[in-house]
Image 1 (cartoon, rainbow, N blue to C red):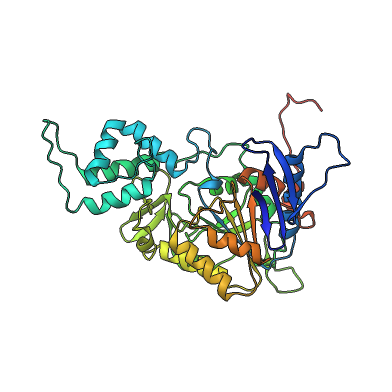
Image 2: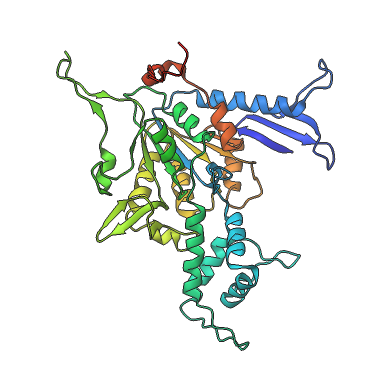
Amino acid sequence: MKYLYLNGKKSVAIQYQGNTEDVENVLINGKVHDFKDEENPNKLAYAIATKREMYKQFLSNQFENLSVLTGAGSSVGIGETNTGRLLSQLWEDVDTEITSPILTKFCELVKYEDKEDNGNYIKNLEKLLSIANIAKNYVVDNPDDGNPPMNIEGMITRIESIIKVKCTITLPNDSPHKDFLEKITKRKVTAPRIKIFTLNYDTLFEQAARKSNYTIIDGFSFSIPRTFSGRNFDYDIVARNSSRVKEEDNFIQKVFHLYKPHGSIDWERIDDNVCQKENAVNPLMIYPKDSKYESSYEQPYFEMMSRFQQSLRNENVLLICIGFSFSDKHIVTAIIEALEQNPSFQLIVVNKGIDELSINFKPFFNAAKKYNNIALVDEEFADFAEHYPNLKSYNHEDDKKIIITNNPNLND
């Protein structure tokens, strides 16, 4: 049985016919749905439609605080030149760039020995870099074939450079990020601002926001050069009008907070400041390795993590996790704490597949079967953005803006 949606007593699941991909049964809330009045029903389409209605109902509740956490699943396959990559795909990129023989030698040198049954290396770039980061302190290459010795630290730097290049992504016009931003920010302007925490290094959310005229509060100053300070997250954008009768804040629309706990390709340390700039030479990024947990206690990452923990302790808060693998210990710990300590905390997890066998994810799967404040959804980011409930009562003002063109070639 494969779950498409799981939220306490509410669920959508499918059963396949033997080892085929043909759906034999659709189970709604644990009971097999009866298609007897339909001729040749599309059972999979019915299950997907039911799943989407269920998570629309879950998301249509009014949450005072809304936070979003995104991982690789919100970027994978998206981009004009480079496209978002999974860690396994980044391994393949490294293999292509430095060639298979050199990557194999590097694995052998640092004693990375995880292999599949067919003898190929398991594409776990995070573990490889973790082992290499330790090995660089005591392993020395002494080749006896006449070739120059391999420099482990230099190879780590080269791999990280490949990661940086592959995570430099241009937002395509059909990206779901713009549609998703438009929907999640449609709420009362007096409500707390939406908070987006992305573990990705790319700038897809920033690009989508700029294309739609959003104001991003991301911890960096509005002056040039844009320098980081945690206090910038405490500011907001209001419109002041001296002719108003009531002297009260008038919060403008299309503003959200953006946090990047693992860094960004457009961050760079200049002297004692962290600055945001295009084409950063040495971007501030926590690369995939086991030391990223310790690195999260350094600035500016520590500020981002502190804000994440703080956001989960708010009253009536919903956290939407999209494309997150639950393999980051420091992030998972904060989510578990919120589930255990905050009675008004709600969680919805959106991933391509509900992996009930994953060691990291199994506790959340078991909890979702018992409690109705946790919902698990089998959905890709693009489809989730498309079917996210659209609260039309809070349409943004500039949706109706007038566009004037003075192109004389256009017909009247």
